Amino acid sequence: MRQSLSSGNAHVADVPPRHSWLALPGLCCEAAGGDPREANSVAAAWALLYTAAHLFDSVQDGDPAEPWWQALGQGPAINVATGLLTSAWLVLAQLEIQRKVVQQLIQDFQQTVLRMASGQHLDLTDPRPSLRAAWSIAEAKSGAFFGLACRSGARLADAPQPITDHYGEFGFNLGLIVQIGDDLEDIQAGRSAPPLPMAYSMEMALGADDNSAQLYLATKLAQFRARALNSLDATGGAQPAKDQLADLIRSLVPELEAIPNNG
Amino acid sequence: MTLEQVVHRIAIDSAFAAAFRADPEAALRQEGVSLERGEVLALAAALQNKNEPKAGFPWYESQLDSDKPQAGFPWYEAQLGIRPT
Image (cartoon, rainbow over all chains, first blue to last red; front, side, top):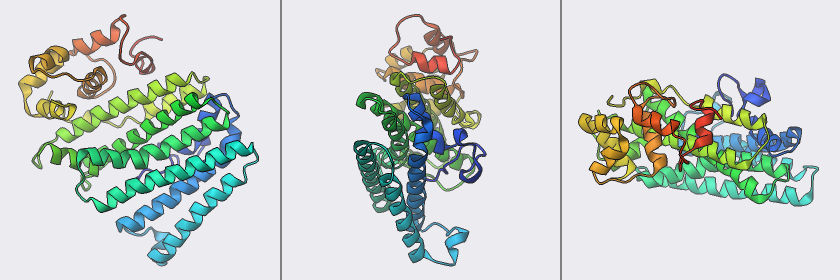
């Protein structure tokens, strides 16, 4: 998962909260009838989890070190990631809300970490995953992570379980859209082949000059976008938070004009 | 054929691509292929390069304008501004 916790030009440090991924728990809380301010700590825990996962991922993938840990090396970087992850649990444990909700949140976060770790395990151990496996990896990493943010927000609003699940589905599809957007961006920028299009090309036994992987990703993007918006619709959530979540989806459609479509 | 195979066929076979653009359901039926409606709509949207109707793609537009109950995504389409809520 490469996406940052930001959308557009806004970044974690300077973002107006409602235009950032960090706004997801609050927007979902508000749409589900709660007070978005109550989601601030959950958003912080989610951001800590993201930062820890990103750091673990960078070290495990052997990515170039970021400037702040370049001199420290991989060992200290792993240590920092462990600290960030533990801090996420502490933030959740200190929430001053119903004990039952705290327990549900912690359990959901931990189950999501397990799912993300299983996706990462597949990613690390299978250098040439099948298309089905590549989707499983994307679902377990990006889908699960974004699903957690939205589900947590709805949980804080004390939404009934089926509604909470719809918010989770919305976030899950949102995560896959973000992942596809990253992959399309990589292809269009000529960076190394990302797993999903590479797996599609292998599955279809395509040559290097075949560009149908982009059309395939664009199709899946449209499909997940529709699913996300339908999940959002099924929540029956309140406007305008629901509209803002829909706007988020709209803003995520990358420049599709460049995608070859044999037309 | 799966969605993956249909996408590939469109990319390499301009006659099939043209037939799909004109009438996706007929083109798929001709090949003995059955895709989910959501897959057909998604592929149609991707082929348009955007999620809005465009001249020259009558089937997609007619589907979106239809008053028939759709197995598809009415609210999604409304969100996209394709038809009024």
